[in-house]
Image (cartoon, rainbow, N blue to C red; front, side):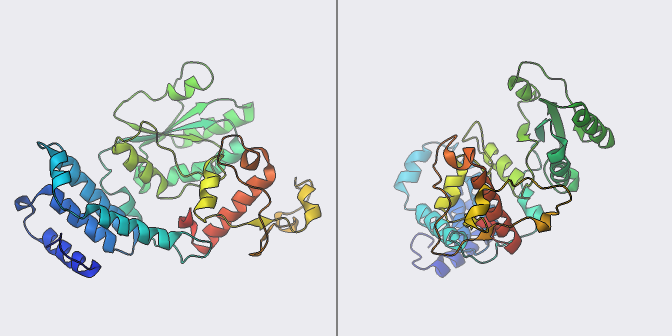
Length: 329
């Protein structure tokens, strides 16, 4: 019945029926297909993600059986059609300059099924001005606060005495969760020497990160557990490669200086000048081109070398965050 259902609604009903009966009587691949069919019928991205994860778990169990590839090729399960429907629907929801507000489910669903994985952060520190902000996100992402982090390790790369004093005080006040572990090696190698346990998922962060979505760390851990890649990267805003990707999927909004002359203004805040008094970049009109072309390569002119591009990336993201459409990224 699942194979020959011709409409989305019929597929959804058959899938729900299949999930309600005794699953032990059915092929695990078929039950996984039911989960994916349900995911394709859902309008909420978070709910669809959970159904996909459940189906994936069943398929991994089934894959251990004899001749799984033959079953996959010879059986007319419409798996790929279901997944294509889901991808198309999600792309329609989250691409383009103007989208509806992002769907948001309960935060506890983000960490569902990840309770048995130990997760630690390794934070490269040296600048207290940014670390003051990052600390708030690290604290929010602790498992005791509804996140996934069990512990935070600070690795000192370069730090002035005042920066070190701030870090020592931070660790002292949050000693149950924060620590400065002993490290070895030179330069970048010492950062990773803090990663000792092969069963732990380590999240490496720089201290200049000033925003972390609630979904970021759970998504990184979930992908790492799939064992498809050795390293998994976050979706980083103002990134040398990903900025071009953000432009391709329609996430970037073009922002421009208030006037052409202000493009070359010294943007450092003057003494006693408030942030509100500084000239603000404005959102471009539809017919106005962006400042520069974004190339998809490391150390490109935009965004790696030009500060104007960094302003553009931040203004675009902050505008998305303000109106609830950051899922466009």
